[in-house]
Image (cartoon, rainbow, N blue to C red; front, top):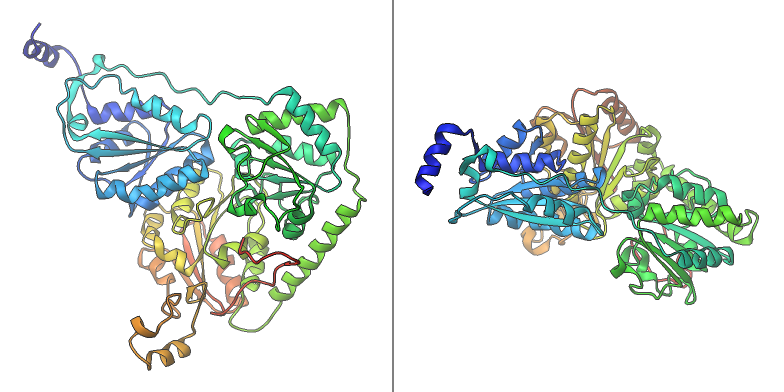
Length: 555
């Protein structure tokens, strides 16, 4: 039969379906539930079709923020979020989010529209199950699917389209039994053991097993920034307040989904003992032995490997002595560091410092809230004060140290909380510089009326800034391009007015009392998002670090 006759018969006898509808159905078949993006030719029809299929579409103001949001959904749900972009500049803008997803090992699918090309048939759209599989199997990451414009609008017989079955969850792999036995032996012989819990453990949903291991063996643990909440931060075995001391003197360190990269100082002296023994638990073989040769490698799903370790300690019960000198050292350092932080928080001078702000925020934070954070000192200091009690409830600049992720991450968490009808709030803590990267996403927040409270910790600069009087005095000496330090931003910028411009609640606060009142009102009001612009001392910084013979580091 000729192509013309086939088309004529199809038009007369068969229901037609567009390429956009096929794409949307393929995504729905793969259990993709969330799409973020900015529409334009030729992808607008894909977004419309996705909504009709029941995929939630969130229109963003910048492709970079859309990509950050889609990747965060992947981390929070385990199924990839989709970022929908146009070709050329749209895809270029999304590259930052794709790189960030790869560095954080979060599943993500980016769909981009491209120019038309001659194509005889649409086929079975096998790219989608392949993309989903690639994004979630092994070490998760980003995938890109290119959709030619003529595919989007092409009409085909509905019965000629074959959809692939939903991609199954990743297979669960286990470590070798001999390696498990060896790891258990190394842990039992440790004089100063330490567990480090990374975001890989959070993604693997290993919280129950790791908590059992900690409590059964009486081991101290330290969470990485996004490992916070796998075991609650207020757990008695958490030694985050003595982080530097714990890393510096531990003789055996077990890494649960944590990488020996810059966040953990590469596992090298002087931050660690030269002869420290690392036990690496990771899903990715390429990560094992990176920077430091481990004493034991446990390749496999982190949750499954943790259960294997528990079985070993069930067979031969063992506990690390709670009265050991190591525990005494850690508890003493935790006590002194916490006292130093509380001393800074209790200062009455104005403008406020970081610690005063975060201690007042911590007092009112709901225990089940998502905490999103980005900035320099804002993120670093906030991490030490703001507590997480649930896994996968902290999102920050991550492995790539990316600024600009905050509002995209917050939108993703809020969309998820709203869809699940949990009543959870999202507290997004931003430095004033970090807020500037994606501040226009406030309109997105207001458009979808998301349960987000933005806290902009405003020191008038990147790291540090100037007060109004110093700024005015400086400008007497020349144009700002010539005399203003590169780290400076405009003093006393009223970021809260960005929120009120779109119908949300805005607060400009300068005292602890104003902060307490505005946060209390924001938490009580579930009808609209809020932004609290918190003015702090422009030269404020963090407390002195536990140096010993260590070099200084922000992390």
